[in-house]
Image 1 (cartoon, rainbow, N blue to C red):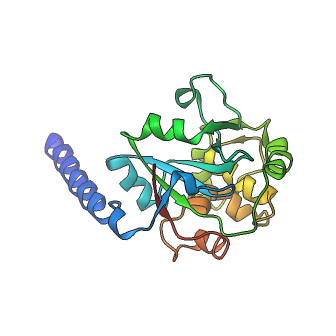
Image 2: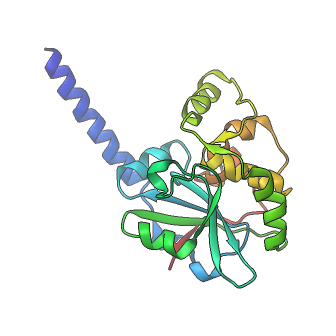
Length: 221
């Protein structure tokens, strides 16, 4: 009898997963697009793997599994500022770093979908980004502990303490704070991933960026 319950539960999970996949499937034809060459400093870029993973994250109100911020240098070259674990960084750099945007997209174009929250504020110079953002965040380190911190906040209401071990979403939130785009708030910090990547304009985290960031665009090369 126990096996019947297990099989039944798995079947129900598969049905739910399929329905969620359909409900939250990327509808690229109804979203505006933005070209790689149009990215500017301050744009939030996020990626998510193809398949079921994106649906699971969408249910939680997150459009991507990895958050980055664009930096267009004085020569017009676009870089992505982010933090990753060893598995996602061949040089094992667990600290904030810059990746050439075109290389990142080329490496993941067959396995991930990229979208952008376009920055609508005043232009951010390369010098300002380096001095105001990277100089203050360069010693932060990547950690997977953000999962437990997030669950404590969502389930128990226990806020995250200020720390230098962060995930990608935490880093982008701190970029916004360093640039003066948003004030630091412990509730937003505790829910940084959704704050930076909320799925719909109706979600509370998105309202914190409304007016400074536009609605999500699909990124094309």
